[in-house]
Image (cartoon, rainbow, N blue to C red; front, top):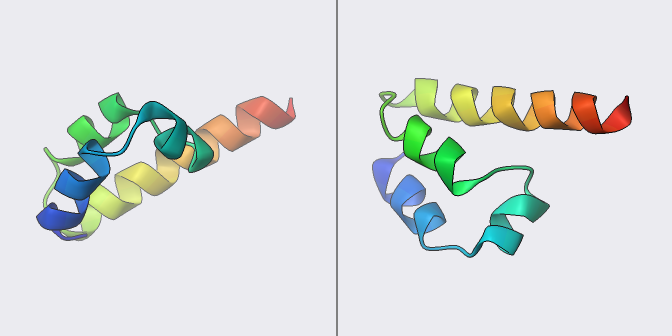
Length: 55
């Protein structure tokens, strides 16, 4: 995942990120991961929230 994409995501409001199953904290954490690992990190966070919501 490109760093510029993550920076753009940080500019989104909480509702927009929430629609994707993410938070600003998730994106900030992803910025600490290099390249593909950032995308995998966000995917894991989104999947965890989806699984919790389905419980």
